[in-house]
Length: 155
Image (cartoon, rainbow, N blue to C red; front, top):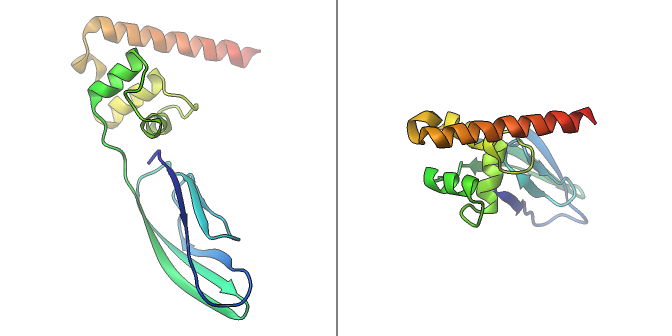
């Protein structure tokens, strides 16, 4: 979850181009099937096991099959997330940042709202793991970010 995904369904035989269809099941949010190429691509926004029924047609021939996609959440160290939030650098990968943004406010960048969502997902409370001064600073950053967003919306 959060990583860019690309995989192409394959078929052999038939005549001419292949036409793909999803005939059953549900694609994870964020992924899609290109009906002309069989390419499944995107960034998964939910985890779980997804079974898709697909059919490919080429000329007078057709074939059906089931594809299983297993999407997992990345395993992140809380200390790495805190360090990345307080002193952005190369602590988290782009995929890890994207994952945190997906479970957070999904605004396209990693910020305090994503960190708070991560803590909620993990059943953690900021006051239990951080010194009070850090919690206050994070809450102030959050208030400041919300105020800036409201000003931007008002334009």
